[in-house]
Length: 207
Image (cartoon, rainbow, N blue to C red; front, side, top):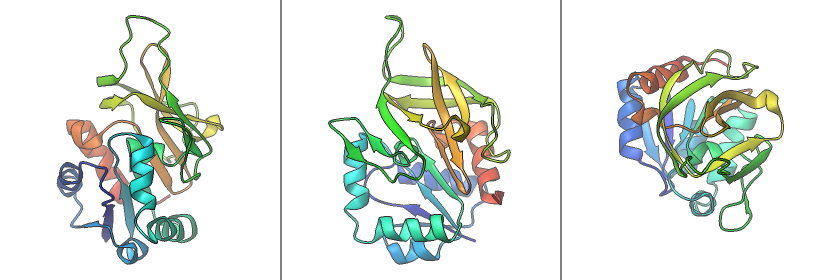
């Protein structure tokens, strides 16, 4: 099984690759080559930083978005988006203006609203992951504690795409899923045993 870990200049690739290998992945291709993505059995899109900069980096690789769309949306390859990689699944991001996302799961990525002055933004550190009312990820996401670091959050249009929630002065989406696509706002590679178990399940996931 070949796993393509997409290198578009916006993710902590070394840590994610190491975590995937620790979770059982034997063939992790860290790649900016659309042909490798098009041939991969599974695809992981990491992401760190601003939505706008990440989108610019991803779309800046000729043919990459087309290869991802062909392999995931048409070919059915399991896909995992991490942090901003999850946010890029949205219709658009509202950080530094409006930026188009992949549009695979309809919704916006907006600034976390501070309803309580005691609540800090960014949302940083360990927090609970609670399953949503629906299970669009077919048992992939489990309840537990994971490591978060973000100032913007994904607000999907369809509540049935919410796979998990967390609480930071109010509910925030911790994971989204639709068909063979799943995204997590937290960092599995920084979430110790919880994160490794999630990655291990992703490697076996048959949506």
